[in-house]
Length: 303
Image (cartoon, rainbow, N blue to C red; front, side, top):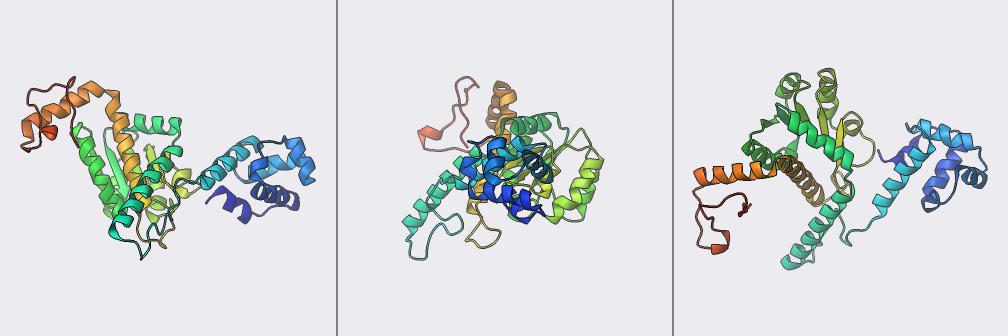
């Protein structure tokens, strides 16, 4: 749940509701006023701001204000004029659709990047580097998206696999330990999968990386590192999962790149060696041809 929605739905005292209403109506003024000035403006007592913060599960007013403003700024950022749910119309021709989807995907990457936090990303990287086994738990199309990440990580020598989201997933969960890592992908963060698996991970002290939307949700609240998906699509009132899929691909690529960078030259030479030994593809296009005598210092690997 978004913080703005949580403020609207919470059972608040009259004075707390006055402050919540002011936050929702005039967010641009929150950073300009001290607690004393806000209290005077809302005809409340400064201590009420602390009580409201506690009800919203924050340590104090400053933490609540910071989180609220971060959410407000994100929701008001306009990366594209396209409709995130209906990015093209029935009157668009194929080239118009192509242009609008290109704009949407570019905007999605920028949007997802804006949601990144260094400490969360660094923590996720360390979990992956230290894990003996990495298991990905995802439903529907998200499990298909994860396959490329699994392939790339396995080529680096990591033990990564997709856990089937059915009865067998509980066996997978119980077989993980503190030496392993679980990645859970859920747009809503409220899936039955997350609610059933996370208590198992907590009991076994399994580090959990969540890939989910902004705001409070069950998955984010019970994970050890959280990476946020672009949160601008409806659950089902849309043409397709265009932006959320692009966002997830970007985040998984980012995790792979972060792990790769830890031993950059070693990993690059490893991939080149594998390619030279097993990749039999050829091409008449000079630009993409491989020189069989290449080394990590003077080569690159095409996708």
